[in-house]
Picture 1 (cartoon, rainbow, N blue to C red):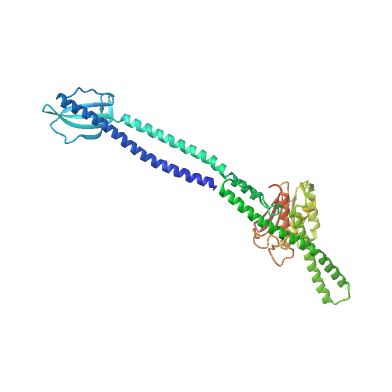
Picture 2 (cartoon, helix red, strand yellow; picture 1 turned 45 degrees about the horizontal axis):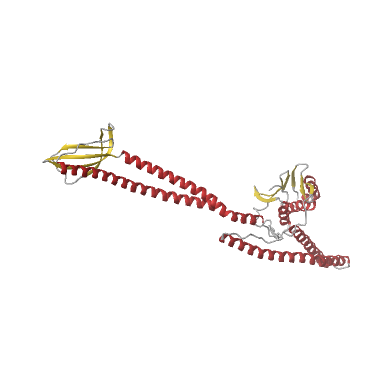
Length: 419
């Protein structure tokens, strides 16, 4: 869930809750105020009648309206105090039953007691109350709507530098020639984040450059001693020496070969990371893949592997010929090395992808480490552990997506040519 969405949910929920409570409280306060005003109107009418009787010793002429009317009855009972009550009674002005507020009191006129009931229709009060509540609810709805719109625009504008920083981080790679350089922002927290990321990537970049320089220098320095050792071992093999010595020298030669392959792989990775290759060649992948399969035919046959091919013709990519050969070679070599005898290898190529699937001897490989340098699923296997790392790096600079899956006891390596 996005931070803005979570903030909006909490903000809107809190606002609605506050407005609902406020509206309920407002309703009861308004009802209390209007009811009190209604009582004041009835009391005012009572005082006028009492004042008229005290002054003229007779009841005043009753003048009723549509929303207020008075009834006068002779009474033998004297009310101790005026009595307010709500009732449903007939309104002669409207000729219908209405909900009213009544004030009943007794008065002595020339020795005769009268029960006077002043009726005030609650219709106007209720209509006014409904209108005020409706307007209030409408205002709350408008406030919520404007609050949501303003928050959305404001929060999006405030968080735009954050998303810009995220975009820079997504596109940044450690092999870039420059460390991450994020701009200063007017918001202190975002500026602190950018400064921290700049400092961190600066340190990482320096460490990476030092490590890369060491790798380059070590690879170049290894080349001459390896050539000398190989030359010396070849000369020793031509000498008249014992069989045991020959075995020892052959072991040395195997080690030299492995070091030489490691040396070449490290040099290649360094060149790839330094973007020393340009992808401006039209590489006929169908023909190249078929050629490489044919070249490794003896290796497939030595392990009695069954090859199932589904290679569409005339698949051409804007690629680099040498890197394409290395990519296919590494994939096929990895497949041959890790497919058990009498296993099945399936190779598919179309406009979207190159897929190599082979029978597995064990469970899934470690997805987190499969493309790391020097990782080997079985440590007793030959190889430098750099083949798949080179495949991944070639895919990265070429804009391909390299993916590994384990399904139905098969290892599946897929290279998608379009991200």
